[in-house]
Image 1: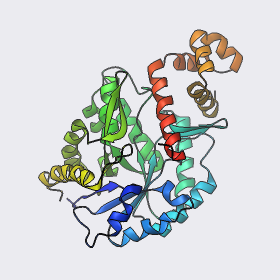
Image 2 (image 1 turned 180 degrees about the horizontal axis):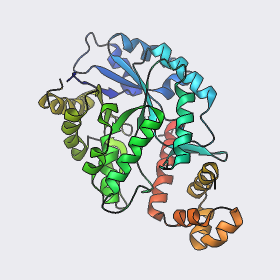
Image 3 (image 1 turned 180 degrees about the vertical axis):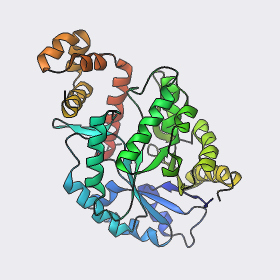
Amino acid sequence: MTPVAVGLSLRERWIDELAGWTTRGPFEVLEVMLDDLLCASSRRDAIRRLGRRWTLVAHGVDLGIGDAEGVDADYVSRAHHALRALSARWWSDHLAFLRAGGIELGHFAPVGDDEETLRALRANARAATRSAPCPLLLENASDVLGLGAHGPDAGATLGRGYARALEATDAGALLDLTNLVYDAHNGGWSAQDYLDALPWDRVVQVHLAGGRRANGLWIDTHSAPIADDALALLAQVAERAPQLRAVTVEWDDGVPALPVMLTEVARAEAVLAKAGRR
Amino acid sequence: MSLAARQTLMARFLTEPALEAEVRTNPEAASARFDVDLGFVRWLAALEPRRVRSFRRSRAVKDARRRGDA
């Protein structure tokens, strides 16, 4: 199968250091936060220049593809402009709703699996991807509310729900393995059942990160080394996903020095190499 | 009950502790007051309180990060 690139989700702390590198180093892809490109910032040019050495993909948090009220046309337009300037290979956002009734949730609320939701997803995806310069991936947002399904078939039910949403939107999948294992732990269901329900030919990218446990719940805070359980699933993903193109590591809180991140990227790289995807 | 109405009520439930308390305490009254489907209100009322608190904390962290406070 096609080799898979490894990389990291770019943070401000590393931009100048990476700009000074004379080679690509041990990774191939940088995931750029779309927010960083949409804000008026002198850093946008510095980020774009990194594209001379690394493949750039973009990750957003404001699309609200599950919003019944529709996606914001102005945001979509600005996002497309930014993606074009970046020459992004693809962009991603979360399968979630963000705003309703004048309330900006600012954090991902879950979408259901009913026909009305699927119609909304279909319409929003058409609006978001019409004239887009690159394909859209949707990430399995963390089920913080534990809304998922319940019972022994919960994992399979949730996996099928994600699959139906991807089909309705015709989007690729950004499979966040840390979200998956934490949701499974918190909900008492099988991550393997979830994976077995996925449309593997749609999986393009994987996210890996580490979180923490608080009040009896695992939370994907992106503040620690990659969760072992999540990394353990990467080998299976590498074997089952023929369209997998990149694995990126995230760290948002207490962003470490670059060598620490590269150690995490190397952990992912080792799993992919063993699976024959490097 | 439309998807938009369900999402609006959920958004309020997640961001307004007083409304959350009202829904949990008396979902029938909340259903009548907001003219929403009782089944959906009961579904909201069944959400684990610690999960809702976790959602609010995550939201606050994201807000702080966006403002550059984090």
